[in-house]
Structures are given as structure tokens and as C-alpha cells.
Amino acid sequence: MSKDHNNIILKASELSIGYKAKKAESVVASNINFELEKGQLIGLVGANGIGKSTLLRTLIKVQPALSGSTILNGKDLKSTTSLELAKQLSIVLTEPISSKNLLVYELVALGRHPYTNWIGSLTESDIAIVNNALKLVNIEDLKTKRCYELSDGQLQKVMLARALAQDTDIIVLDEPTTHLDMYHKAYILKLLQKLTKETGKTILFSSHEIDLAIQLCDTMIVMQSDKVIFDEPCNLISEGVFASLFPSDLIVFDTTSGSFRVNK
Image (cartoon, rainbow, N blue to C red; front, side, top):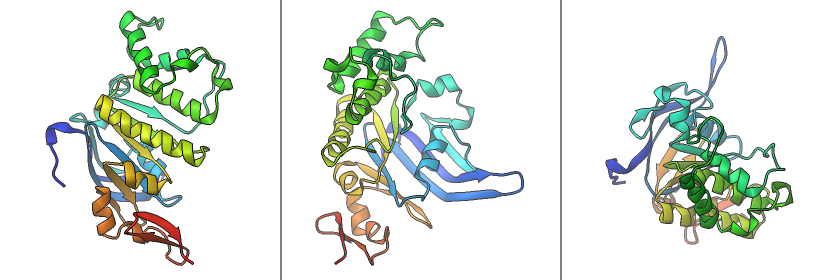
């Protein structure tokens, strides 16, 4: 897969992820290599418990890598400070927010925290960025509502707007379609695709919605029990990667339609 190296935002080289104990290491996945480009939508998929969240936590510096390197905008993640990271990478996690009494506008405005002064005052520029984030996600009509008044789908859009207000090169989302119905799953992922085109930001998300990811992503990271594969969806299909993702006694992958179906 040909790449413009000037456009690479995040690069993993021979990355090994897992957990360290006092006397041993527990390796979840190893030999992970990929290069995420500016303005692309990337889906991270795999079976339950395969290590998707562990990989994301490693990429956002919540969890240390066992070995290998992660380079963000040309700098090793290990030597990137928390403030530098907050200005380059924003995160949308699945954990419920602790401050649902906030107004939508207030929650989105928290995305400006890495840039504000010690009392958190918003400048005219900050306010313009917050308002643009609300507009990009099409939730301007919700900005005076309390977060506890929102549906799961609306709250997910608010969290995405907060990440946009943070104005980073890359946005990382962990299972952004959890608890959503089929329509809103497709809506959120289609919105992510639209945002990459409109903003030029790189968006990486983990998901169980593999069929949707195949249709919408520029590239995908597929975690299997013995390896991690990074490529364009069409290449992954032709190479039989999805066909071997789950036991074929129940689920099979239809290469013609590019989707999974129950094996009858």
C-alpha cells in the first residue's frame, strides 16, 4: 500500500502490547506495524477479547507498550508530554461521563482545556472553535440542554464535538456505537467518515460493526489471535482476512457482498 510519508500522523513499529507484572509479562499482541495518514478513517476490528482496547490504551499513552515504538507526528510517544499529547490527540471513550449536569455547550468547551489559561477562560478564538465543532456534528440545537437529557446517540455526538473542539490531528474513539440501534450505528460511523473529509483529521475507532467499517473506512487494523493486519478493506477481503476472523461453523464471510452472514 503506497503512502505519502509526509502525511503520516501515527506510526507503530514492531509494537508489542500487554501487561507487566513483577515476575512476568502477558503479551496480548505483538509485531504490530501500521502507518495512519492524515484525513483517513481507520477501523480497528477483531473478535471480543482479542485486545482492541489494550491497543488503543497503548496508542493514547494510558498503558505502556511492552516493546516497539509509537511515533506521533514524528516524535516517540514515550517522550511526548501530557500537554503535547493533548494538543495532538483527542479521545472519546465508552465510560459514562461523570458530569451529566453540564450543559452541552459547557461539555464541548472542555475540549479547549489544553489551550486555556489557568482559570479556563475562553478567548474569542476558543468560542469560535467550540461553535464550529457543534456545527460540524450538527448539534447546535442541543447546546443549551443538560447532558442528562440526551439520548445515547446525542451524547455520543456531543463527546465527538468535544474531541473536535480539542482541535487535534487525530481522534481516537473506543466503541463509539455501543448501545446504539442499527440506524444510529450507521449514522455515527458515516459522520466520522464525513468529518475526515471536511476537517482533514485522522480518525481511528474500534468497533464490532465490521460490515459498516468495511464500507466506510479508508484502511483497517484487523486483530487476529496470531497477528495484526493493516490494509485497505478491498485488499483484506481479497486476502481472506475476514473469512478467517470467526469460526466458520456459525458465521461466514461473503466476499461478494463484503458482509458476514449466519451459516445455515
